[in-house]
Amino acid sequence: MPDASPSHGTTIPQQVEADLKDAMRAGDTARRDALRLLRAALKNAEIERRGGDHAPMDDSDVRAVIQRQIKQRRDSVEQFRSGKREDLAVKEEAEIAVFQSYLPQAMDEAAMRSAAIAVIAETGAHGPKEMGKVMPVLLARVGDSADRSVLAGIVRQLLSS
Image (cartoon, helix red, strand yellow):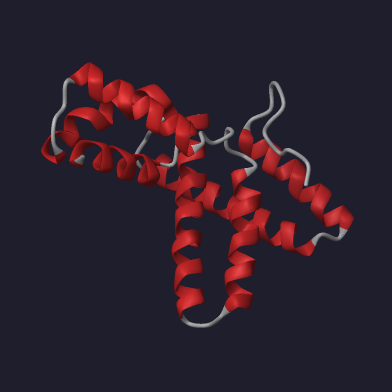
């Protein structure tokens, strides 16, 4: 699968549209369907945003929508697997893979742990009750490149030890 991250000057929604056309031409129905779902989620988020008289969505807003879609699918995968529906779990995982191609390369767990250790040292946090002191600083530092739930688990573990 080619890297779908937007090329210079192209927004993520424009790239999704272009990739959707390519998938349709290639007869790649799984990718086509995933991209249609993503396009619909992005349009719905744009409509919700417009209803509140906000500025158009920027790349960070778009990435947040994509991350929500990925989280929903991860939850679905768990439910499908517990319900013995491997076929549906595999379909959801394929959609996750398509969606992730529009996000920046994710940090690996070692890099997240290293960043968490540095921020804990800087903030002087001790114990799980000071997680609220660490997380905002850490999230500001790593941005969209880290899975927040994994990051929170790492911080919780480090503060508990």
